[in-house]
Amino acid sequence: MQARALTPLALAVSVPPGLLITAILVVNNLRDIRTDARAGKRTLAVLLGERGTRREYALLVGGAYAILPFLWRVGGLSPFVMLPWLTFPLALRLVRGVAQLQGTALNEMLAGTARLALVFSLLLAVGIALS
Image (cartoon, rainbow, N blue to C red):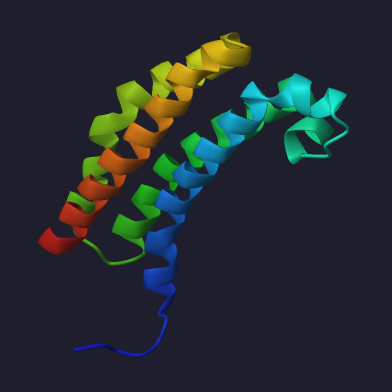
């Protein structure tokens, strides 16, 4: 049965996957930052610069994990909602890679971030279903 209402918990549960999907866009913009700047494009990455964009990526990825304990302890979901933490080693490798790589070398990080978002979201869905 549909509730036909957006509850605060439903909104909160949507944030971690949304942060990771945004991280895909951020690494894509970081990869293209130099060509975008030369073309006069005013993307957020161009405005923040490489260093700021790398920080943005780390905050987005880290934020997805930081919200999970809130969903468990405050949101009233079971500890199964913490299942996405199983992907944390991959996330750490991606954040380190994004911090170091440039240009087309970021393509691997782009694909990895998409994989992370998928597996994280699937594990979150399983955790919610088990709650």
